[in-house]
Figure (cartoon, one colour):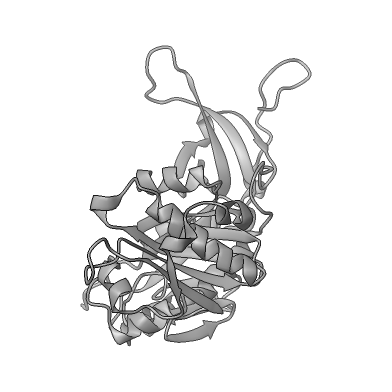
Length: 337
């Protein structure tokens, strides 16, 4: 917190700092005995009618009355990272998008509207990486109409927690009644240490997702559209660890997309009866070796915020969180008068 020369806390932010990352201390309205203050760090997304809206790294919005402010200052937009490859949000967003392509897309300024018959939110949501070229309300009307014509709910994918992410857009969507349905995180790490793990002889790599791989994949009843999405990307590999019984579903599977210096991992799944045996690690190590051969040096993956087992596994492999991403769904259209 900012402290004056006289030793007093000071509020050194104003409404002109909207869009900047700030750290504030405020009086606790209903705190426990002995607790008078609370600290909040995030992007100042609005300051209207005496109320500050601050969006935290994980996407949560906090409202603070201006009258409750005790101290505040602008802080660096992104803290220094101790581990993991250097990467901007925009670079990772574009790499992740190329690894999971829709079957149909359309540009709206610097927004990309994506559709794939409803197979996953990532392939059926707007990726806003800049200015849509029209006012926000008009852009959102176009989005709702475009998805409505395809019989799909309208989603906008946003991100928080890194330099260049979209805390302000999150706040504007929430202000308009859009609902955040799902949040996850994108983690990054180095590819070489990952490749040194596991037992490569147990893993079979293929360019296509065969019937065996699909039998283990958690999304059942995969359609032709889903197969197109799964097979999309610059250089796609599927990994399989055969099951203990011939003809049974694989013991473990995984998918990797190699794109320049990046290797993106997804669909790492293990037979529940065979977990804690290193099969997931073996799958990722085999895919990482292949990625290294193609020139990749860095790795990324996406993990749900409530998947404790996966987060523990990936942390042990050297992955660290880079940013959170969210899917906002459009509110229901009002009934005609």
